[in-house]
Image 1 (spheres, rainbow, N blue to C red):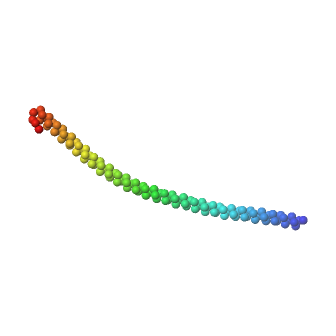
Image 2 (image 1 turned 180 degrees about the horizontal axis):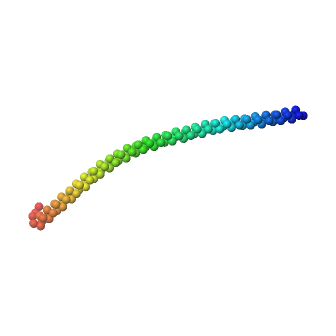
Image 3 (image 1 turned 120 degrees about the vertical axis):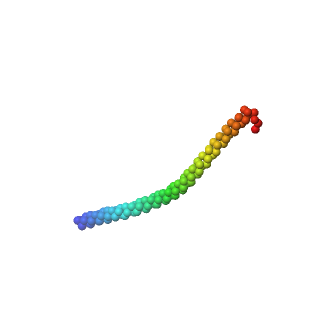
Length: 112
């Protein structure tokens, strides 16, 4: 009877040890697989962000160039506006002179 009990106990202990060791080593393998999966996912995220940064930097460069062109055009338009204002001021001064001389001619009964 002792032999049967010792055989059953040994069998149970062997089964438990095998089950525990199987669970323990497969758990480590799963962790390594999870780490590899997380690393792969992280690398995909980094690559995606690098691509987005590259696209955004190219857009920033394009917008910077456009901004520079618009500033140059604005400066050119300012210069043109100042020239037009000076021209309009001269025209107004000349019109006032003409009106002054017309009044002078009219006051002295001189036809023009």
